Image 1 (tube, rainbow, N blue to C red):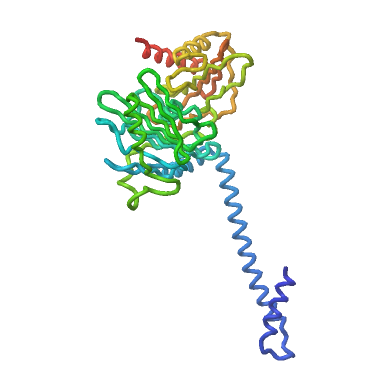
Image 2: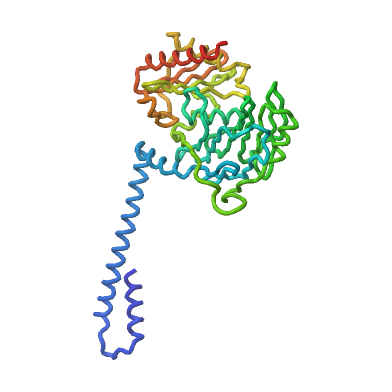
Length: 390
């Protein structure tokens, strides 16, 4: 390295008009020292940057507080713009062609909108942008948003970008429009179930689902009237800039470490030769509980024909049976998967129940006593059953 530098300096100086007896070494040594100082400074700066990055990465991997802070910054870029009579444009841009109704039946207005940009939950939290009034179920926004996605899509996944628009009429009629990038097993079908009609199809690489309490002709008219409002990596398709101001949206963030709890698979291992009906997850707080159950079809029916009330009863029986084994060590962290809930106070723990054909597997973890978490879960499920009873 130094030999090469000396050769370059000597050749450069020798190219000038210098007497033969001139001693080039003072010039060489002076310029070489200057170059070495610059190189050392650059090396120190580069090492400092590398060390700082390593420290930050290690802190991000080990510090839950820093993960939440970074997630908060990332969540700020999730949003939507739009206004009355204008299409909604999303940030970041969805990785599929977005369509919105060019025609809605008389009396229908947008009631809710949920946008999941599809961040990888194994690296950063998935932040969902939500607008409209949530249902009065006492469920955390992230829970409820993903539950609504599952009602429309058996392949719903927190890491996969998706959109859901819900339109309502004053007389109670509803129309749901769900969109995401296509998957290999997606199909175009028309299904009718009592008063609900669901139409699915693929267009421009987007899988679209229309589901509503409308007649066949009317829902087909809505489908035919959908217009492209946004393409991947772009803003609105016509005009300039974003349409209207940022909408009034809330951001619900999912915990990346606990992302697997959202999937429809059994949480606590497989049970050979038994039908897996589904799971119930309850998180307990000082002032309440948040919960969800799954996986079910669009009509709320679980495998084996069970309804959520059937699952709740099985879980209550298992928690009240002193012979039921309780798992107290799980691969998930003891913090809420739906993020902090300031209105509910401190997080106290989680109960996960896998309901199988002949048994119920239970896991209870968290800072609160196992017996207290079990009792609070029983009370919450009993209140759900009471609320569902005619």
